[in-house]
Image 1 (tube, helix red, strand yellow):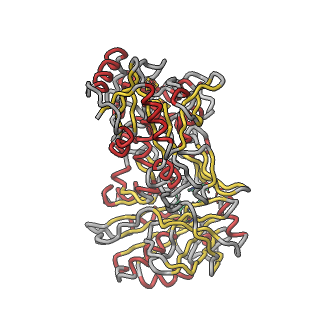
Image 2 (cartoon, rainbow over the protein chains, first blue to last red; image 1 turned 180 degrees about the vertical axis):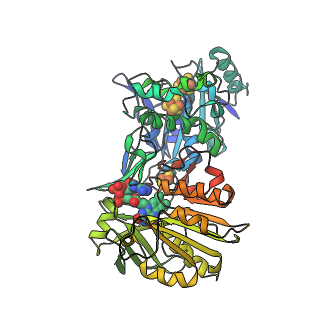
Image 3 (cartoon, helix red, strand yellow; image 1 turned 90 degrees about the horizontal axis):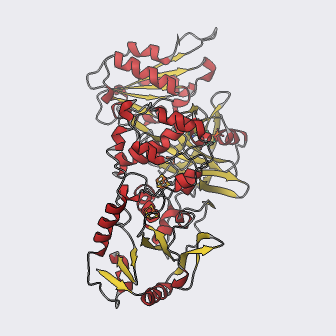
Length: 306
Length: 263
Ligand SMILES: Cc1cc2nc3c(=O)[nH]c(=O)nc-3n(C[C@H](O)[C@H](O)[C@H](O)COP(=O)(O)OP(=O)(O)OC[C@H]3O[C@@H](n4cnc5c(N)ncnc54)[C@H](O)[C@@H]3O)c2cc1C
Ligand code: SF4
Ligand code: SF4
Ligand code: FES
């Protein structure tokens, strides 16, 4: 059931959710859109946040010998492409990593469907920006907020006005796709070539900073290591040389090997093991790359010509 | 509030026995007995130093045993601090699929021998040792691990050993382990289990295929950098598989087209 809420209703919804959850939202602070605690719906920014909300579920760095007390959090204003990242990660790490799992179970995401495409974004290639899987999904058109909830959260919408048009999300999706088009993936998992010169070309510019991994809402790899303060896990990057180094040698000694691994993981390995591409088209890795490596080129490259 | 088991939290224990096998390889035994099977591994750790995946050398209801070559921070620390408590979590990964095979040729190179020791014990417990041939290659006579056990195994099963470089007192085979492969009897539905350094595995597979084994009947225990052991950290993939989750043992025909099988 889709409900039609006014801005006042959204405020009521937020307060209702706030009785059970600590409420966070994307919010403009000093020119950046960041996630922080909010107390009113009016604080929520509908702009794309500067960073993905990944660290609600995977901390940049934390001690792994003890699971901390996890508070229930509700996060308003997440973009669909970022939220979809969690559904993709779920397929590999939910119910395996206890830290991710306990946070995932205690965090409610309220995603806002974009009405205009962000520069560079290609979420339409992955079915976006309207999602099939969500907690509570919001589409803001004119004065109206169309809201739909997963059965687990439907209760929060009780008492609000059902929308007359129950197809608003479907129609919005069609219109958005018509307006912006999409990059066809075209069986990319079968098209990519191991020996493509694309990997060495990228390696010529790449400075191994790892920004693409850190900004990506689907990159879940972590480094586990000990230091004086205990055993930690920390965001890791498959672009770094040490990622696969062992006492017996390194399977990916060259940067081009590691770049290829990143794209193969996203567009081939995950597709084969989980049935989904490990990318949502958010374009964050492109926005944050200091040398302008564009993952879209991996999709559009003509491998047959090589 | 949901309570959840912290899979990363190891159980801490001091070994009850410590034995040097060679200059740099040692065996530790714990009083703990688990139902872990040959081929599986544990994450062993030392607080403040790190964690390492180590194969079960003796499990299956026996006191849990590991044999470790000191190569880096964790593996050296344990050797140099014999009295310290070691963190253990596991067992993880799959086991050698020996049940149902007609005959098994197990080929171990270097520090690949511990999971083959576990295999011998696993098969022995069901009276199947007649179906096992072991080929073991060490670098030199002084690098041979399990010298005492080997004498006993030679009486119970077809156990063959070779060294890359002999010494004046060595009377046995000299040459890499693959040179033993042509000498093993061919069984129609025989399987081969291979574990060791990447280059040794690569040549063993080639030799096995020459000797009539099909890729479907060859199994490899693959080694990758591992940090979590439970399919979370993303370090140990070979193609679409995480070695800690889908391995460490793979049927060769399943992975033979992956360019990164051997380092
Ligand atoms: C499934 C499996 C079973 C193994 N069984 C045995 C065994 O029975 N006996 C034995 O001596 N060795 C075994 N190894 C190899 C052993 O894990 C490494 O030698 C060990 O991790 C080195 O750790 P370190 O801290 O001493 O070395 P460092 O070089 O200081 O390693 C730092 C970290 O890198 C990682 N790492 C380094 N080398 C390896 C490697 N070869 N494989 C995986 N991760 C690595 C580990 O996370 C380690 O903590 C096994 C490896 C795997 C994957
Ligand atoms: S990629 Fe799509 S969903 Fe994400 S911010 Fe851009 S337009 Fe919105
Ligand atoms: S576009 Fe880049 S950052 Fe966004 S999901 Fe895909 S790989 Fe990750
Ligand atoms: S060791 Fe972490 S995914 Fe395999």
